[in-house]
Length: 317
Image (tube, rainbow, N blue to C red; front, side, top):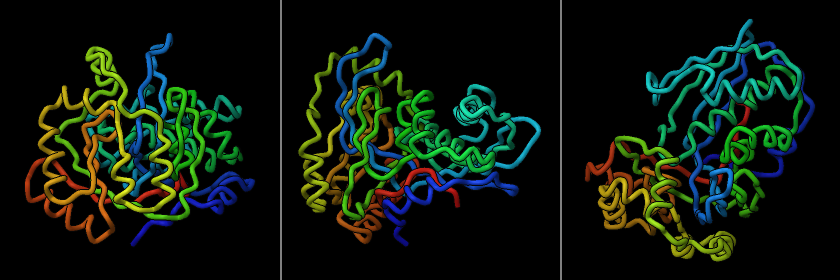
C-alpha cells in the first residue's frame, strides 16, 4: 500500500491545540535521502555550508512515550546493543530540549523501535530525535506548532528540523534551514541497498576536505524542475551528491553496489547523504520490486529495501 503523501492537511492537524495524553503516545518517523547535496566551504564553526534537497521516504522508526517519574530510553531492532541509551542519545537530548523550552519536567518513558539502519546516510538518529520531540509534545500537552518544534530541532542537529516536517524540502545553512517544496502529490519509488557497516558522517566530511573535492552538484534548479515534471527519467538525470566521492574513497566496494543496481535496470543510483547506503530510482512500484529482487540475488549488500516518497515527517499514530 502506498503511503499517504505530504499535504497541507497534515499541517492543520499537527498545529491544533493539544491536551496532555494520558495513555502512551506512538509516533512514526521516516528516513530521509538527499536528492541533491551541494557541499560548500567549511565554516568557522566546523560545519560546511550546504544546499540540499531532502526527501522523506517510507522507511520508519517508531517512538512510544509513556508517563514516568524520570526520563528513560529503551529500544529494540536495528542497532540494539550498539547505541548508547544515555544522556548523549539524541532522543534523550531532544526530550530535555523540549522540557527546557517549555518549562515542563523531563519525565517520560521512551521506547524506540528501530528499522532505519544506523550510520547509513538516512538520518536515523535525527529521525528518532524528531519523533521524540513530537511524542513528548503530545504526552506533555505542550502544544507547540510544527515550526516551534523545528526551531528546537535546529539546536540539536542539521537534519532534525526536516524530519519534523517531512515531504520534500530545500535545506540550506548547515541543512537546518528548511523550506518545503510542493511536489503535487507525485510518488517516487526507491530501492535502498543497505551496507554491512555504517560510515561516520564527520569522517566522510573530513575525507571530502582532504580530497580537495570541488562541488559537482551545483545548484538544485535542474532537480527542482525535474520534480515538477513528475517524470522519473528526467529526475534520474539530476540526482547529485558531492559526498559520494568521499564515501567511495572510504568504501571502494560501493562502486560495485552502484554498478549492480544500474546493471539491474535502475534509472539512476547514488550514495545517500554521507553513505554508505546506496539509493536507486525506479520507474514505479513494480519496477522497484523487480529491481530489489535482482539486487538481493547479487548479494552485494546486507539488505535491500523498497520505499516510496515523499511521506510526512514525524506523526502521531
